[in-house]
Image: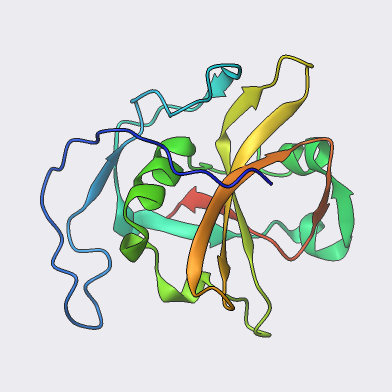
Length: 167
């Protein structure tokens, strides 16, 4: 995993007050039509654009097949979310700049295990031909979020969700 913090500027539609238990979502939006940050040697090969998306609409999603089969390659996993509104890497960009926007419930699953959260709405290509998606996870020992990429050639644990736009 390549942990990195991108240097980008996102237009703030409304500043979020980070006080109080229910302050996470407020009326923050993500402009999914923006181009995501990308290393100079990588290129975007797929980027699902959905306009302005409210943070309160973002959900973690597990497909039925994903939960039934413990490990599959990332390319197969990608096919499991064809019919879901998977969030693109602009959300990853926003979260990497301001991790306080990430809900605490995304740190662990119901069994207390670390989640590796994927953003399948943007696919990147490496010069060697490998495809990548953005990922993030919370490291309890360091008490911080890590942001990186994961190859679709890698094996993916079934317990790890993707971010979708839901109701």
